[in-house]
View 1 (tube, rainbow, N blue to C red):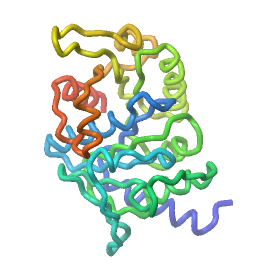
View 2 (cartoon, rainbow, N blue to C red):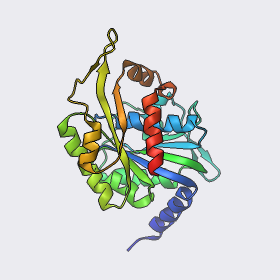
View 3 (cartoon, one colour):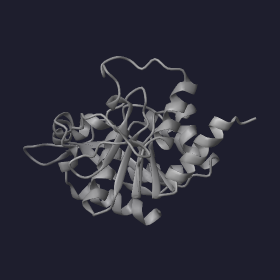
View 4 (cartoon, rainbow, N blue to C red):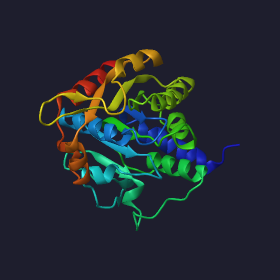
Length: 261
């Protein structure tokens, strides 16, 4: 039986999420394929198009979003909840790393604690009225992504993979989970698809053949586009300036995603 505190939290989540027009999760099924990068790029391009955007770093044990955007200030207490910091691009950001005293310490939490933290990000944060809330999910198909899917009433999910067949096989589990939870898969993004030679301009497929479109067909989901290995991405992310990264292929990914909403 649901206790009164849980009922109040559910009501608050419904109230806050009801002010957000579109809630989009970014998932991978496994770590290391660039899910947080894709989340950051989606949020950045939507903000550049003039939309009101929020970015929720739900990857509790591996938060990286604030560093990518150069956000260091802590959230503050507002009249109706916690007010998240805002990036220079105007994106409202919330992450566990913003409230930890020592960001280098490991977050050693069991599943229920992680899931509860994600619920608090939805119930206690003053997101306000947004056009889009991008949610960077943790890898896998366990408590935390399940909590988001059950509580947030998502408008869709973007899945991220890399060219390796092993990565794609695991990503298919995230697609299967979304289908089980009746969450629409907006499409697949293939990250680290190739590298461009700085001297001759030739594309090198370092991690396997660039078959993003074929992989999407195999999974039965739309293909949104591919992102190459680009040293500028690492440099900008390390310097907290990922919001300034501008490439036509990222714009194309965002445009293709919006067609599916």
